[in-house]
Length: 84
Image (cartoon, rainbow, N blue to C red; front, side):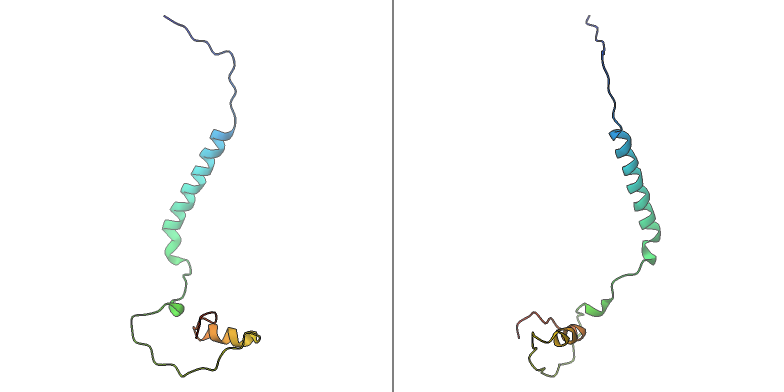
């Protein structure tokens, strides 16, 4: 029969820190489940729908040196970086 003795024992705070962090994550998850429906969501404005879109009139070529042309293309829902 062997007997074991502990001569030195050191404890750190990391188990308590990780337990506290896990508890905070759990609380945040529960709050997200309870209140997530009321959070603002992304608009469907930029999503493509399955419905047919009206044909667009041909537009003049974008001038990359004119930032306002690029912004106007984005406002129309076009990709100014795409090829024409």
